[in-house]
Length: 409
Image (cartoon, rainbow, N blue to C red; front, top):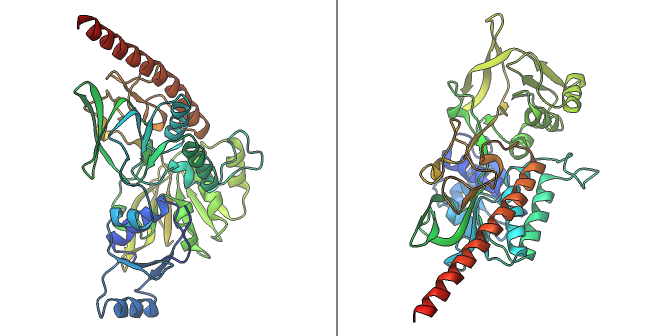
């Protein structure tokens, strides 16, 4: 999805502004952010628009219409997103809208099943907000995450998959001979099978100041927020593939990117690691952990670090930090219907079925998954094949019951 000439007027400290920015970013909607604390013309515009008021965020769209302090649901409606399914019953409901979910949906729909996909944020998952994918087969020159996501979404639509976005699932269960999926908006949909493919979210460091400056200097998506730091130095926390790749992306805007790595070496693949270590605009500091974030005027300006070998405390004075230290599974809503491991990942059998018959899990939320895009798509296909066998068995059982009932009459 791409919208132009959308302007979001707000401040760096405003929590509703952060929420709206996050929502637009997840939907891959392009917008300009105007900080009314720094842009007096922007502040005057908002006051004129509100007859002296100064409620934020104020979002102005290309057609001149506005939304003032909108909910995510109001934003979804304005952007034309589907928020309610057409039917109440489906063969298969998929919770999640990333590569795993969409691949399963394509396979299921091709088999002739009615498939509903429900995604809490933007379709395409984390892949959609990745700047560039260079290791997915079939794209020798690489492909942008947004382009890759759009291709998979369009392919799903081609086979008649019904897609809902900006809808948070709060419960999955089974009763009355079928499974059900309930959304935060109160809608309940029923099905013969459910696939949980909700993925994972970025892990936080958990140090003082982190929560205070999320969206105001502390970020988890370089693609979303990197351009705001054009011409300024930033820090990236982490030493894996995601951290190194996002740090490399940030060098497009920033004259210097410092990588803070807890261990004594990078865990990223050799190509990415060599690129970081040999880049003239990237500095790698090993055995370094963040112990605190500080700021002024409601925005980050200092990262307090500790050398894990010497105990020495130092400070980096930068306006932006991007954290890439791992993932937490999005599984909390399913703990009563599926068995979880100690880290919260959903446990399944080799057929991707959870501890509840007819409810499956695949992708980053599943215990044992490899957290790579190509394997996410592969798991989606493999799970779809298992679900097909389950649905065939369900259809056969339903037919047997119908025949028994007919004979008894």
